[in-house]
Image (tube, helix red, strand yellow):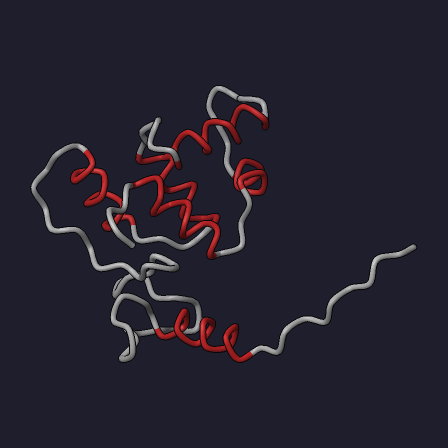
Length: 138
């Protein structure tokens, strides 16, 4: 996955869970109340590493999609300059040994930078027949 920031980690986990930013904005709250569009923009800024999350915000996000808060906290520390070893994450879905994919996964024997679920998805995509070409309407 290369150098993973806290925001890219959260975005990757969110998108892998199939949750859009709008859905996430609907699932989270703000105190004081903030308009839905502003919450969505704030979440976009979090994923771009332009905003820092509070512990309460982390708890709310964990209710919306799976991620490992310990991984997030290590990434936050690294992003702030701490000389820590980056966590091992799947380069495609950002799962870890402590935050496995739904249904379970492990590190792929064929490519240890991805999990077995992502390896199977890649193999399935490679084996899928090409889609038929669509004809243009006259």
